[in-house]
Length: 435
Image (cartoon, rainbow, N blue to C red; front, top):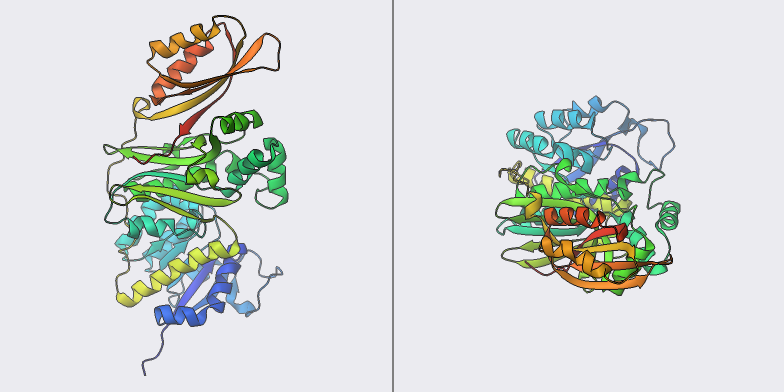
């Protein structure tokens, strides 16, 4: 009988996700053996402090505070990285790939910034580099983009890819409470960090959309290419008016491809309440993918948590081991091969929601519509309500589709009108029709 080969894994990081990875590998040995034909074992784990108390029942000799003890070990076949940070992690993974070790990482910041370089090195070294967990936790969206849509052409992605902001906006909508109060609640529940800026300013979602756009459009999309706006300015009034008009406000990542030019954005967006994404609440993530051949598909599930996250990591690990057995490593995720072309503002189109305070007197609406007519921006709907100030009123306007360039010019001209007291908010509107 042929001896069963053991696949040795080195684990960089033994925090919450790292412990989850170990638990799944140790607890699912029979399943892993059936799927791969191999024993898979974590033989060394990197920690900051070996003496720290942790839920670790295996030999302390498997722990090390020296990353090079793992990276230079010729017996280790695969590196799993769940330690985070960009430096020195990038150097560690580049070294591992150059040494012929396969890499599985959960590091979205690193992949968003250096994914193309790492993929190029993986291809050169005939190694695998997988990063399913870097976007949307346990949802297998990256594998779907790489493998499931391999014969299709993706034209659009719309996603809720940050659970913290989705929880906050969902609770603001459900309970009628302000942003600041819901942020504190999210922190109390452990959904938001003590410093929540990466989530609420949209940075986390923007990194994830850069990764997804890179894979969907085969272009080297970076964080800086993403048009970005967080949720800190979303008010209870905005949410209530959007609901009155048949919408929900979500922090949406949107990426579109038209005529080989792309746009990628993360911003609070009004989405039709009948669209499935409008019904995604709490800390859940969901991503809508539009393909030329398949049409619309949706991926939904938990975006974070120890076991959903670790499950995505181990799923990548299983893929690597299967490809080792077939001798086809290095042929999975491929580096970008199309030239990146970003759309100019005159090619980026959307409908818009505008909420403003105006002088409440005869002829105001007529004056206000002049800039719309001059710039050929068509108005879809107008709602007027009293303002909490004598002699003032609130106007809510939803436009038909117009360009970002036209909208910027329109806002500038509206702001200059004497009858306009203040522009409260502007949001893009996503109806959600297939394109």
